[in-house]
Length: 370
Length: 225
Image 1: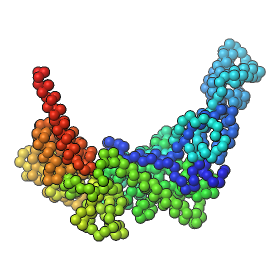
Image 2 (image 1 turned 60 degrees about the vertical axis):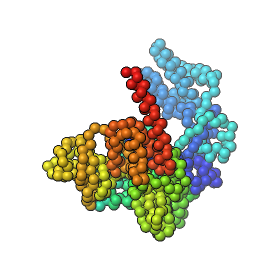
Image 3 (image 1 turned 30 degrees about the vertical axis):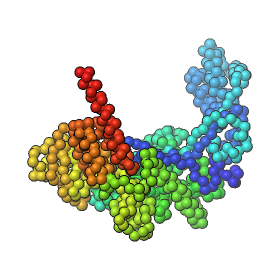
Image 4 (image 1 turned 90 degrees about the vertical axis):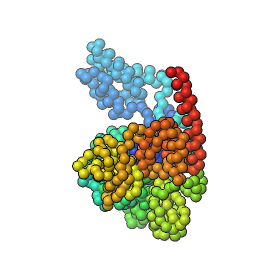
């Protein structure tokens, strides 16, 4: 991979684009939405270039949005479309139909079924004939296109994609919505502390937030994230001002692409402030680490999966640089760790700036003083 | 929460963690000191006046304070008195001897906070029952703007709409009679624009317009009858 840029075209210490909005929910005392991810462009490319693009996929964070069905997909389609009692080697048929678009695959199934129902034995040569005929027809048809989702910043760097037409734009990243309720009566009453307010943080990921359906039940991961975020916030708010109450923070992840806990915590900071809860500072969070031999800020899923990845989500109070949350996944030398924390503090301050601006924007809509 | 509704240019919007001043000042509500700097705790309007720094809050729940006049709803009737919901994380208690009449579940009362204990539960006194009219709820920290400097805003509202209006420090407002719809809309407008200046003028204008409209409507309605 190219050394000067990252897999998504960003500089090594560059954050993804972050959009924050405060006060989005009427029913909650405080709320915020954070969209934290890559802005992308959708390119339209001829299907025959697929192998070229597949190759780019190894080094760059691009996604093929729609393409010719792969061998596994073909097998699944055949399995679903052919009569159950037909005795055919599906593996072999899937291999034989390589390169056919989905429509062509349906045609093959249709004609195989017709032949089967009219009493044909479906010998090897008969099957071959049908596939070849369909293939001819499919090729005579209009050109098959694929669509490639490429980070905006990467576009200028990849000569290979220059010629393709841009047909749309997209977003790939994290979306978190946080609602804060409280301080309110603790229910059950016995969780209340007569000396300070208790924060309850519930982190949940929507089933549709990741490519494979995520089971919605909170698991070990959710419980852990809820716990560390709760502890990060507990010392940030002036909890002693509201004895015998709870502050409920609900963080819902609607889309995920590495760094959901920092997205949730960043949103939670804004939502708490929006609820009018007194705090020492608004905690700002960011993930930093290492990928492909470089110390980088704000890792994507692609970088997180790198063989040498270190992922260090952290949250700080920007005013004092106190650390409110620090976790790490991976192995780092002490020197690397210093570098990572320095970078994290610097980047979190950038996030903090965006949080402040978002809160002030809520009032600037009607503000006319100053 | 000592906002008296005066329009001053030296107020600016702050968020938690923002430095208000590095000078030595007295600390008002909504601020704390860290490393010799006065820092905001909340989202609100910062102000340094007469050697005191404070932040006037824009959001937040009501926490009872002795002397506050609040509008509550009776949620439980007990032998020694009544439990009262005061739109707060904390409940209030009204002893039976502090009210002339028997109260029932759901009664709306206007009362004064007499005492607040160490876990902020309040004791009420001087309760009167409010009958008829309607209750609306606003963000408690914006109540001072509805009252205005030396009660100027609330006087304006009462005078122009002809409604009886009672404002509780806990964000509940009771409106009875007059152009109550107009009064409600005006209060909503004050709530939404609490952080802006020149509010009194805008509200006067708003009231004049809406009341003229309402009167015109009434007249046509009567002529149709």
